[in-house]
Length: 296
Image (tube, rainbow, N blue to C red):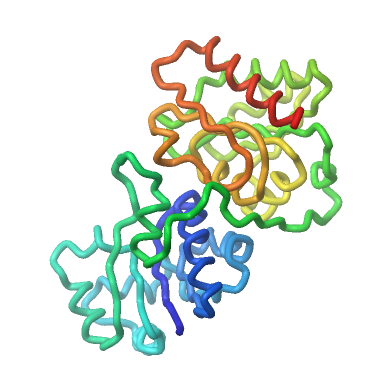
């Protein structure tokens, strides 16, 4: 069976969906996954057996919402045995449903989870794809570090610290990250700071404190850095979900979102709800959880 999946979600969403799709792939389904161009490398890591389809942010896919469907894309869609499209929010007037129905291929429109709920978001993906709820651990992947960059060499006490997130409201206080980094180094550990474009202005401060920074890395390089370190500290972000998929141990801090709903499934990542709690209290808990996984 050839299952074509159209998915416009971000990296964290993709990590959760990929864990569910892996179950379908294990049932001898052929998975074809269409994601945004920037996330194509993640598909190879999270779901190696999947075929990567036309990009969701490409011109052909955009035509799904226009007056005329691209002829090659229409042929591509018709070749599927089933289409699962996480595009329900884009089907305001029902035109997308009618267009997919005209292809005479079984299809379903789903919503990328965005609202809060008591259950974990992965259950929404599992229900959409007819898969039993996933266990606590997702399937781990391990890209092989290569190349001459020094941080690609594995560090036995390396902590990758990622103080960023896709939304400013999801970011824990920078002072908290600084205190945890200082304590980790005082105990003989190494800290490497992973910075995205939004966090790039922080680089001078981290370097002034003598810490290594990796700035604006490609997704593949970021994954290799995460894989080179046993330990992780980050916010509710796509990178934290990737760290879980890479089977890392450590801590993910949640501020604007609830850990029970959005925590990474893979690895040994403790999830801490920090909203409304004093910085000193959260720092102590982060340090205790990191020390616990380092001692195990």
